[in-house]
Each structure stands twice: as C-alpha cells, then as structure tokens.
Length: 130
Image (cartoon, rainbow, N blue to C red):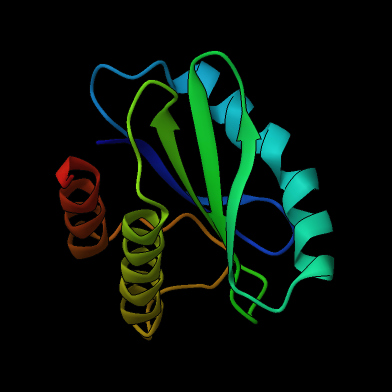
C-alpha cells in the first residue's frame, strides 16, 4: 500500500499532500522533496512521463510521474513492500486524471492547495488500494 501521494506544482510548491494516518509526515515530505532534483534530471533524459524510482532510503522509495504540464506526481512506498512498477504507474496516472478533473472546476485557482472533497476522497482511496 502507498504511504503517501503528492502533487507538486511546476515551481515545486505543494498542491496536495496525502498521507496514511500512521505515516510520519515529516519523514515522507523530506523523502519527496529530496527526490525533486532527481526528478528534474530524469525529465530531461527521457520522453516517458512515468519516471520510475527517483529516490530510495532505508525506509521509503519514491516514484515519479511528470506529464507535459510539468506538474509532478509522487507516490511513496515502504522499501519493504514488493512493488510492481506497472501498478505504481497506473496509480499515478489515475491521480493525474483526478487532478485534471478537480482543476477543471472554475472556482479552483491554479497553483493553490487542492482540497476539494472529491479529489481528497479519490486520493485516499488510491492510497488504500494495493
């Protein structure tokens, strides 16, 4: 199961940070922000929007997804979990689709924190899926 899902704007400001209840938010945020430089490098090297593993430490592994809008979508998993990258890719693609639906709301100001109930509920459901 996913410990955290994050949406980061093109200027590296957080749009959404979702954590499991028992997760250490500070540690996961540190892992995510540590991976952003690696993500920028991988974006220049590849044409694929799924960037794979960006960062790994003793406890967590960070996967990245960056479409042409330069929004960054991150999924953080415990290192001990057996992970199939296709499942992570599907999860991040679904998060991206949910973001597009939420940002299409005419009352949402782009670049601000995204806290609409439908997006938060969909993201929490994604985190609970295997």
